[in-house]
Image (cartoon, rainbow, N blue to C red; front, side, top):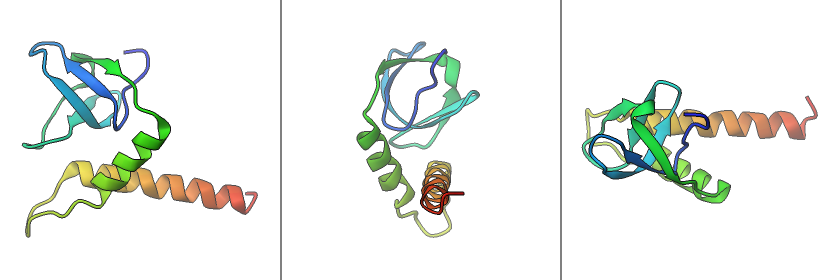
Length: 98
């Protein structure tokens, strides 16, 4: 995959033909939105439609704010929360001219 999918993009899972909205993807794994939580190798999907930057960050924020059942953890939430933290840190450094 030349350009990795990102949160909010639509992909087709090649073996099943299913269309998924991406919750998170990196060079190794792609996690989809919806239930059950799960992941597949990123190369097993092809990007069908790219989302806009605004759509991307809106979904990142929504996923990061998800409520988990007591005693449950969701990797998608943790990853999107980390993306938001990295974005906020970069914005802060830019404002401070560092």
